[in-house]
Image (cartoon, rainbow, N blue to C red; front, side, top):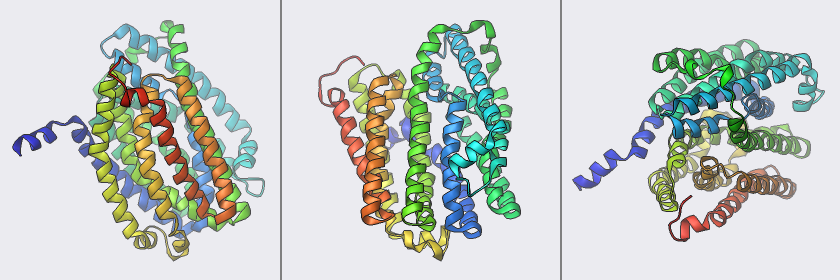
Length: 431
């Protein structure tokens, strides 16, 4: 028995998970407080509009960093002791991200009406939000790449502490702006909070390492332009196509079911995004660097199984509790106006279970730069999600969107098992 507990104590995944749980708990609490304030003051309609902005913001921010976060993490984990390779990779990354961010910021600032009509429609006028985003975007891009450096060096405690501080400051800014300016304040908070996080990151990273010595204009490497371009395409596809699909699904619900129904769907998405922070941050700070170092299919399979045995039971228990308390959660996090969202919980929770199981496998695409496998499976999954949502919403109402979410991740999980069948069921081999 003692040896079993000693084994648990020395399990790196459990150590990272435990510390990560603290960071996620703080982020969940701050997120739920923000969600409650927005739901009470702005209602389902405000939540639906905020959902559209969040989706497009995800895309814009990813384009600004060229989606290179995972690529930077992988190559730092792989070449952390090779100064020459690190200098070439980081110099190339920062130069190209700087150029793209400036172009994108200029477009946002000088043509905000285009973005307003694209996201909200011409019945709304929130052009000022996109001018604010243009100013904040360079700060966000720098912050994201700094966090990638910290993550690549496996300094997970530093990474989590930065996120805790950013969550608390972000909550205070959100409460102030929403209270003073209502919906416009919520929009501003969503835009500027990621940029403000840079102040925290810079203070911490300068104490941890002098990363500026790795960024030299005369060290731009064509080799890393080619290597990082595949990461850029993979990340940008997920970061642009998926939010665009979610916006189209949300707008379809608004047009066929009503804006309040779209607000209910956005509410369940918001709840899911909060507890899913635990798994997404754990995959980023632990699993991606780990998979990048693995060279044998046997070790990949063992890592996936270890993750399932350690993490999935915790989520199953959590999902059972959430489902049992769903009506209480709706009243606490939102208000009585949101009670009609109750049927969405079952489909969302089942869908999130299969999403977690899928992501653990899918991160191998990023760790091993499996470009075409990633692109093909993502395109198939995105297409399945969109067409299933349209069909099921037409047939079952707004509940159909959550049903489609569940069916999509069951399908995606089976697709990934098929792609990696040789690693899971075949003889040990080099990967």
